[in-house]
Image 1 (tube, rainbow, N blue to C red):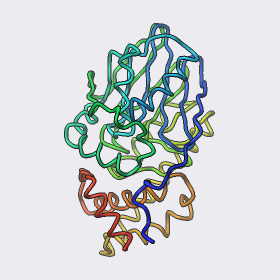
Image 2: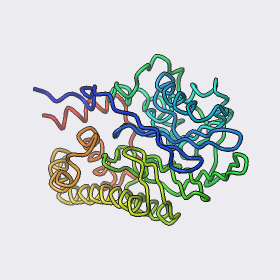
Image 3: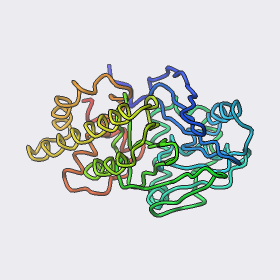
Length: 319
């Protein structure tokens, strides 16, 4: 029997947890599904990643309303992927004034946002519940180059692009006074790293810069909130191991002049024992191997994934 495409067969709903990490910061996590972050300032609220649809965003908004009635004025996009950004329109009714993204994220939306939206929705329908409520692409209203600082009353919030990794435009949100970090998909824990649009060679040095901030609490893109320096270090190390092993196998596959199926088999030898049981591993691996093989072959800027390209790749690896 043919294996279901990507995660179309994943229908199990995940338990959502809304956890307070500090006086102002909260983690919205869901057993390996995409996380969001919430920062409650003196006068307003900031969201880190919006959920995938306006319909799904209503649960996050409801959780926020259990702790504050302040307006949700700021929405930060950690990167351009549809599952992170298409819920943004839900926050307009809650007072949202700014949708903030890095220059790299804006450029990726321009280049491939439409194709990515169609591709992601087809790959993982459960994560796009209420997709009919999506009005279209999410466009930033405020674009920054390297770093901006907001003050939510007295609370300082730094929004930073430390370098490429998961995508070329990855953005983190940092509360220096409380040592709380929202990493987006630059860091994962107990979940596979999706690397289909990654800059794999650059990713470890970006993790070095992220680690140098000295976070005591970190909300990864997927997986549980990491509390304490030891857990933060473990999450960053886990991610570094995943992406470096993946690229090493891609380079070896190119060196041996293997085809994509051969590259997959070679990669599994190294990756399955360490990561084979984590969330969305089987979903991510075909896209990850393809990107590692491409980057090792000299394709620096990731090729655009379309729904058609997705299925062609999937079929080639299943036969």
